[in-house]
Length: 252
Image 1 (cartoon, one colour):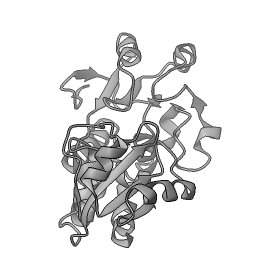
Image 2 (image 1 turned 135 degrees about the vertical axis):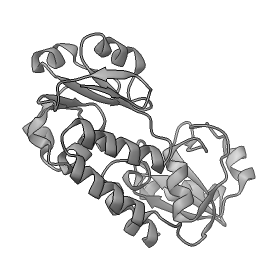
Image 3 (image 1 turned 45 degrees about the vertical axis):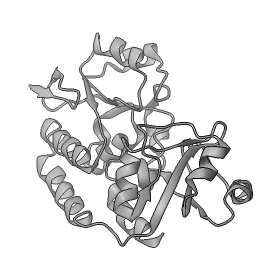
């Protein structure tokens, strides 16, 4: 069967695939929640949900570097990746050998489209449609306004989520106005952070693991800001983890 991925590439796969490698943690969790765990043969070292999955599956590397010999030994009939999270040259090498379906997620609509596509090509159409309908209801209207904010993903250098990201989409739903209006993940100097003067500063748990020990440093820069640690998975994972996101975002 031929399917079109979110990079507008035509991907020919067996229908449905029996040996899947997932190179994206949030999409790995989605596969499991679509009752496809038995079809997964390989995952990354960052595929931490559900708990224990890594012990049951073969680790093929990280999201940027892949153990090509291990992937070859698994004989996948489908590899699932993501434009932002996976390293381009490695993915292109895999594309030359295997069917590779790529997602490209910037907003909730992209996420719902990806979930629907998984259901269609993996023989889980009904279950994926139920998931999409639930998420449409959950995210039908934004939460009450909380004020402006900056969402940090890295410490040295300081890096923030900009306006062309899925995180920005979740910030808007949660009621935050993102002050970082440049694209993707810009670096910010201490001076730029102070000049932006956010009402809220959100320190993500990933990819940089901000801890309680970082709060005082940022408080010294922004003494009037409401500074808090937040669960990065709830802002950046665009698969079935979204089922838990609304309740979490309401709690902030």
